[in-house]
Length: 109
Image (tube, helix red, strand yellow):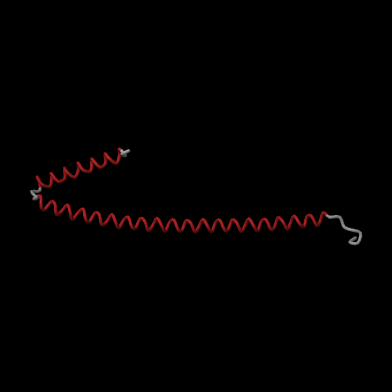
């Protein structure tokens, strides 16, 4: 299914291009050949700048993804170590409590 907003945007942009060309031909008294060359140069420059912007966006996106992944892994590892350390402390406290709660045998008194 065609996205209606994109389709209307395309139609509007094509309409604007046609109106611009008509203006340039009628008001500026520029020949069609000169206008074609100008349009080709402008389009080429626009395409090249779009490619550079796309590459810059890709670089930024990949860097952000990698940094976010490293932060997430570091946070996960830190939380895991805290959890293991807490468990060891709780286990040792539990063992000390069990030892303290044992009744003393006759030889230990």
